[in-house]
Amino acid sequence: MLKNFFTKMSKDIGVDLGTSNTLFYVSGKGIIVNEPSVVAINTRIDQILSVGDDARRMLGKTPPHILAIKPLRHGVISDFEITEKMMKYFIDKIHKESFSMFFRPRIIIGVPLDITEVERKAVEDVALSAGAKEVYLIEQPMASAIGVRLPIQEANGNMIVELGGGKTEIAVISLGGIVASKSLKIAGEKLDNDIIDYVREKYNLFLGEKTAENVKIKIANVLQIESKTQKMKIRGRNLLTGLPKEIVLKSEEVREAIKKSIDIIISAIKDVVENTPPELVSDLYQRGMVLSGGGANILGLDKMIYEATQIPVIIADDSLTTVIRGVGIVVEDFDSLKEVLLPPTFENSYKK
Image (cartoon, rainbow, N blue to C red; front, top):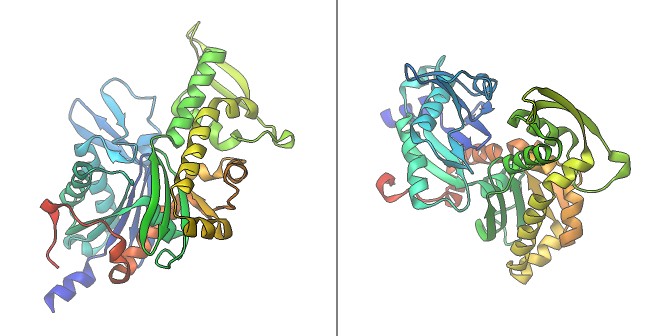
């Protein structure tokens, strides 16, 4: 009876621990945190100054003793201590006005497809150190497929392409398992860097990460559509003079900048289709594939993938939140969907 009381008082939590953004889902409440995965630290006193949106605004603007850090790279933890502090900050924020802060939640976290055993244990340890009672992991493409309500437990082929900040993950799912998949370290942040490199080489102009991301969001396209030509004024530092400089960048130039990375992503999608059993490929041609993640909204990408694969492409609604919505569904219906979760690592295994 006491155990049931603790279970009711403790709100289970779902987490999409992304390279670009961290999202938290709380049972019975929905998505209540959606902030950048950035932490600002004062190195003189070893103290966290801000996390999330406030910390992101500091990127590229800090004095030497303040570091704005992204503690995840390509979807995995690169700085254990900072990631732990970031998660604890968000968990405390969730519970600061709730009596349930005295009870440790069960946490389910979305992780990349090709995560290693060491990386899995690092994610689990971070969540346990941040206050979790139990930690379970779910592969992000699986979570994304659940989030867009694909019938993953049926004997049909379901294909999801999750274009995140640090990784692009491609998976064909049937009967609650991943049949064929591929994971690339080419995604949103790589496209931003492609734009930075292009502008530096062509215009001798150095752009900040936020400016490059805005360019990608506002004018990037991957197909030559004359009526869709767009322009955008951007400002940066002239590498020859060191002074501020403004140029007008065209969507055709952005397309040229990101072409190589987009071609690699499309080639990987074709590889996954080629490695999928024929019966499931037949389902894909009939049912199509779903694009999710921030990269799904790049203009013309769905048409380009269709031209390369001849498989219909559907862009997920609210594509930025498909993973956390899927994790949230598992949080709310844990007993029915626990079979899609990865087993805990040996050190963190839980008694059933």
